[in-house]
Length: 112
Image 1 (spheres, rainbow, N blue to C red):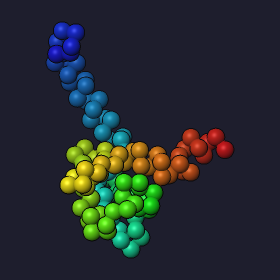
Image 2 (cartoon, one colour; image 1 turned 90 degrees about the vertical axis):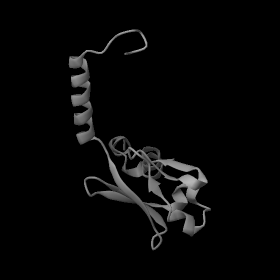
Image 3 (cartoon, one colour; image 1 turned 30 degrees about the horizontal axis):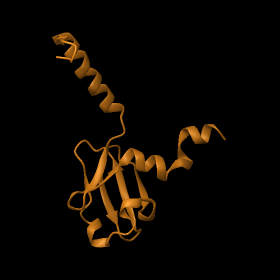
Image 4 (cartoon, rainbow, N blue to C red; image 1 turned 180 degrees about the vertical axis):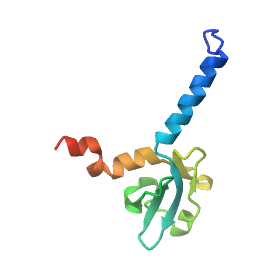
């Protein structure tokens, strides 16, 4: 039920579920994140076997952390962020890629 008292019909619910499935197929979904000490970077791998290495120096909450803490990076449920839970550090993957990779953003390339 929505806040206005509207009851969602089974047909509306079925359409919403189908739309969610279609969006999930098209969306950018992260499979895992790991710290790679050889590169002092965070690896972000997608479900489509593509990925990014983002230098730790580009990720403000991780810059001054002890390298041992970086081994505790975990993908948050839903894959929208990663965290080091015991240090209360949470990083949005979309925000990180938007900040760290502005040169490859399609809007930046098209506006040149």
